Length: 316
Image 1 (tube, rainbow, N blue to C red):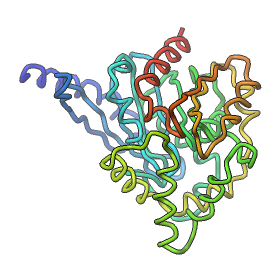
Image 2 (tube, rainbow, N blue to C red):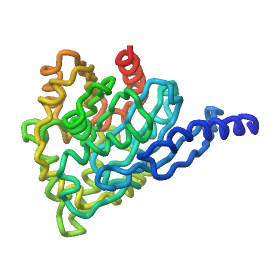
Image 3 (tube, rainbow, N blue to C red):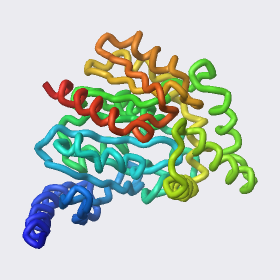
Image 4 (tube, rainbow, N blue to C red):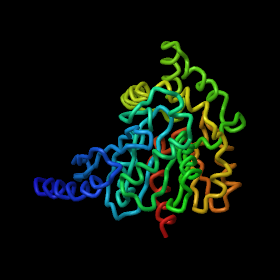
């Protein structure tokens, strides 16, 4: 194990060097972790990048930089840790995996003005900063819930010529009552309440509504803490966004789209993914019969195999 650890540390230094050279990266470190059950030593690179308005974004990367790339974009009130099961999935070990905390979330910067979250150009610039800072060449974007909106904002501003494919997971692609449920509309009001008691209760209820197969109590507590770290201005700003319909953006994207949707989603209707499928000629919809809003968490083994197949196909 000592030899393996020494080799991993050397590899970590090699991996982190190109990232440190990026003008977008402010600080970086390599953390070596051991998966005891699998007997494996892996290195996770942690670094911060600066977006166009100065907001700092916390990023983690793992895997061979020369391998096909996947950039994971989490949902509202979550964090990059949402993708823990994917980062630990042996099925995805052959890829370059990158995740980050959206502005206003997790360990990333939290501007206090709602305008920092209502401007779709800033969400797009965040993705650009992460792609450039992580030295990604042609990643597949995985956008869950709000992350789907953020992926669309990037395409709208920068185009999709350098994006190998897009996986929309129960994604928000249009702010419309025919695609979002009444429950989602209710949370958009309670989550912006000035009453802390109302907002706290809404946070716990919102988190529970994200799953059909509920997390363990330990997992739920961890997620609840992360939800509580989200800046209130995120909710206040996002509902004021000027970009409310991303369907035309995904329709004109020239690459492949994989649509992943839980049948029991209580927030985003399956019709949302069906709409994208009907508009985009190179798209495929995969329904997860046991999942709610978070199929990558609720059915991770199947999701890992589905994502692997899509990424390999998108890079051929």
